[in-house]
Length: 160
Length: 209
Image (cartoon, rainbow over all chains, first blue to last red; front, side, top):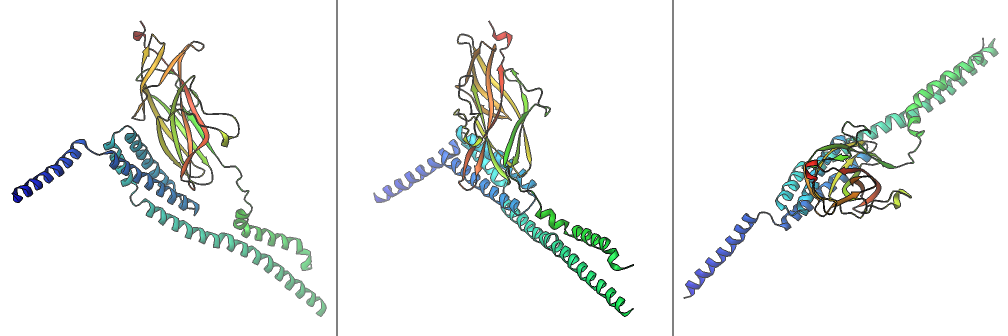
């Protein structure tokens, strides 16, 4: 008797689980999955945007990154629209494409930022400090040379 | 001849050389700071001119315009463009007063798309749109079913324009509001700017009884 009950329970569990998966397969993506996909894509876009702002602040050329971000942003917009219209499959598809497009984006932005920062420091040392100190040296050296020349001339006049 | 006789020439040469060497330094120090931070927003026609904007619209026909954004905010900006539509009686965004006090239209957005523009850069988006609508002769009203914008179908059910007897047209205003992402607050705020086009929804002769 117990064995029959156990078998029935196992069969029932199997049927319930199968029905759940079959339903999901037939109905496609649900709103929760779609919302999660869209939110993930949105968070990624924002994170990438922040990386671009940081890179730009440190003087990096962000034209290429901004171009990519615009393409990803368009996909995210389409994902959001699809979600609003209840087309969850398309929402997940566009959000996935958006995420794929931004794969490795922040790392690339960080590399550009670091390179730009180093270049900026070099530029600062060469152009700002270098030229300022150089100009000061010329002024001081010129003055010293002038003093030397005039004194030498004076001492020459005294000897004569 | 004394060395002092060459003093003027000597100090001129020293001064000019010092200035030449200091020019990279001076170019960084003597820069007039930016004091105005703003965004430009515009619409151009299909040929990127401000001449042949679409006005008389036929159902299902494609029209192209260019929406341009120029960023002078001092940092890479994240904008959201809200596409909206209204008739003559529905609320428009405010156009007067300080730009930061202006309010967006309370009409719902048909579609939002994001635009990223680096500092001192411009971005132009070609926008191709077509309307799908029917004419209700009894109510003298054009009722919309959808707007196709850059191959994205937007639901416009519930939208309509009435006959404007003064201008003898079924006029509707397709407009684009720009919102700016506030990076510290993590929200989009209305940026006080919008552009749009008044369009006349024409009725095909075969529809007129």
